[in-house]
Length: 189
Image 1: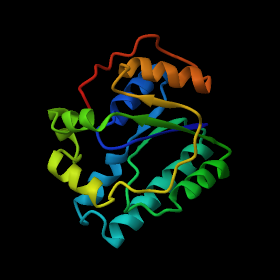
Image 2 (image 1 turned 90 degrees about the horizontal axis):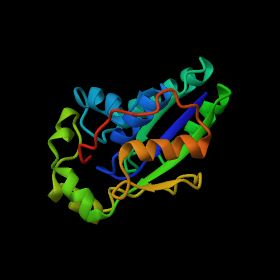
Image 3 (image 1 turned 45 degrees about the horizontal axis):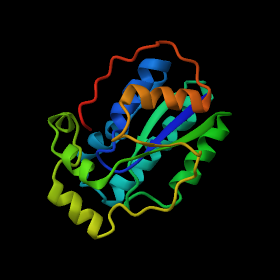
Image 4 (image 1 turned 90 degrees about the vertical axis):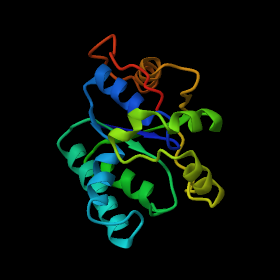
């Protein structure tokens, strides 16, 4: 089992690249907003119950997927409400199930992130869509998080199409490709 851990700032293209990678590999796509949006229906963002349950769900899914040998793609936006020990716990959860975690950093210039922020495709989930709020969060350190482990693979999504990013991930981690041509178009997220 492999857990492909796509991480980067809001609007860096994590879900878009994740969809393209799913198309190529058949790996399950367990993106951040599946859990975040469900919890937001009950708890305000960043409250103790929200933070605790979000991490419990993430880790439970990682461990179960590893034990059941279900290769998975996860999207993660590093930010200050996430427990600083989460990454270590995620690695341990995957390893308990005899899986491997593969970190991929997605980057993008801030001006491009801001352009993508208001893209209508971001409304499908409760994603950050306000440039003003994005700037305020960055200024206040809301995107601060301990450095994530490096795999050596960092992709600037402003310079590469999602399908090409997915192919680079497959090549780098030697993932078996099921479909040669992902059908995901770049919606600008």
